[in-house]
Length: 151
Image 1 (tube, rainbow, N blue to C red):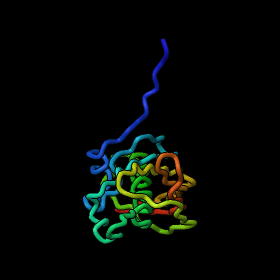
Image 2 (image 1 turned 180 degrees about the vertical axis):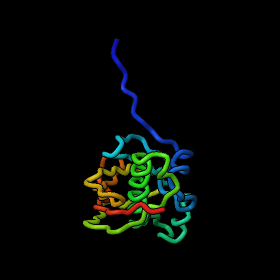
Image 3 (image 1 turned 90 degrees about the vertical axis):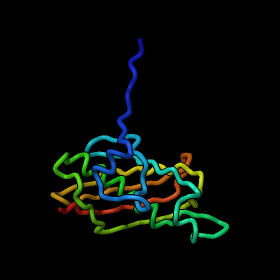
């Protein structure tokens, strides 16, 4: 009998316990895979109902790049809180820097945006991540972000 591997996931209800973001600024729907202290993959199902599509851009909806970066930060925040445990829940994770940001391909309604964050380093309450966003395996954006967790 072949042994089945179960991929760890985190549903939206649990994400909302871990980070303070709410609609319309919650940019991830689920964590579809993770390893504590190492990496996380977040999923954002992009729909035409997103409030930012009203003005970005009428007739040619494109997810703003800054919101893709925010999805990266929120995925990283969930990884940090999940790694640190219950005591970290509800704390804020603030950007300290965004480096090497590149946008490769527009993200549009109907896309399933996968955001992978890999921890590069952490010292006390400061964490640094390498981030890549993809749609159907094609890179849409990338960045290196640094953030600090605070009370």
